[in-house]
Image (cartoon, rainbow, N blue to C red; front, side, top):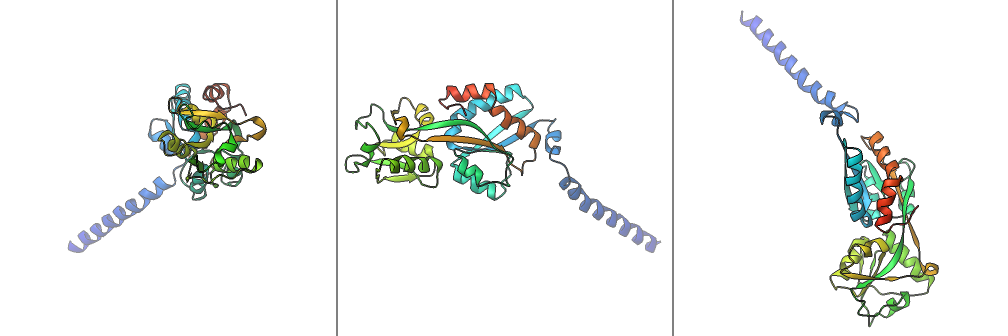
Length: 263
């Protein structure tokens, strides 16, 4: 009797262990849409986006959700070089939007075919009222009179800034080099710098705190913003739809209203 009971107990234990081992394996084998199905068919997209898109993409996300109520878009904003580092580490996200084609091109094999969704231009941001009377790029070289902040050379806006300054043979000694364009804008807003080179759209987000000194077309640089679905995405269909939407009429109007130029 005791032997039979022992066999029964061993069989029950073996069955329990089998269930315990198979359960996580079954969950791990689920397809990319399983998480959506578990949430009533709703999908949350994670999009890595350049810092200069912070304000306009908040509006774009709301507009997209109204049109696609089963999809919520959440963003992670940073300098494009920081976003690229995350992509190279296979950070779990669905789409990427950078502030230059160079960064996106460096991620071939990690993304689907990118499309340009917008363009931008550079301006010189100064304190409100332009108290230092900055008139153009040449004024940024007067280090004794002017505290200038730029983005680091690894940042797209930093590369664009260096390009326009080098073209005019202007040497600037910045008081700091920031990791994204919003860092440059913040220094000027807080009075920690007298001037800084930012995108035109960033200056527009703080009209009561900074003035924008225009850079002539022949001296300026054009920034292009490519968007692409990431190959690590677990929601490829939804990510493709969002990237395609960014190039459509509704998203383009939102970008245009924020000061971005058409692709």
